[in-house]
Length: 360
Image (cartoon, rainbow, N blue to C red; front, side, top):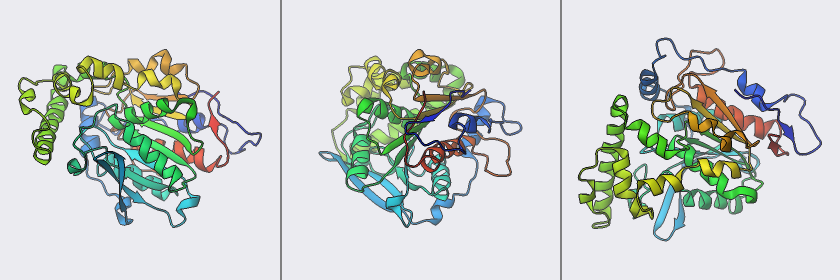
């Protein structure tokens, strides 16, 4: 539960804001009827039919040159007065894209709340394999550093927030930790939903027999992606490395050397966000469910998380992975985590627009 008070660093207090933590805790997660099983929650929560209001708003397709021979794409939904509005950058999960349901759902809520919204495709995702010869991975942050810097320096956006889901949450947290004390004043907050902050424990968890359906889905998608990448960049990757790959750990052993890591273990050690969380110096919200099928909750109790006053954990008993499909409410839809993430950013942006909020 969230129980820390929140203070403003300047002398002005916002009388309507007792604390962001208390406000968020006023909306506890109550799972939809019949969805107390973690696997049903995860599958139905992600696959259920939805309507997305953000699709009613024109998006600007924008490419960012982040490295030599590497570009990434974001779909930008601008408010008419964009330079006076805060902006949310949404980062998707493993083998996802800017068109993932949770991205579109969050984008619609954020735009309706008054934010500019960028739906960001991680390198090579969302039909952009041809824009970089390199692969993405769960700890890839170089592109985020460039995109955020360009939005601040070139676009002159006054306030920026990151919302990351699963892998995108790990990337967002690692990015914030890498900034450390050099965090730009325009970066006001980070929210990570179901982030795999300890990649080794996640890799071991997803290899359990009961999680076969998730692991095989990821592996099939990753194999397909690599073959398509090789068609764009012939000979760049040795497809024979895929022989014998049965688990995500095998995949990482085989493929992460292309990203500069020795093997899977070296990758997990350096790409996990957990070692970077103590260095985060911007208000950060972690949303996670204890019953997530393949992201263990124990790392979220690690002192590196709990000892950082800038980081708040909103842990629920149920919710599955990313899903958090709740009971129907009169004032919001059933996507509970999406609502809490946008509420967190809104409280920071609109209740204290001229102040940096810190957790003491």
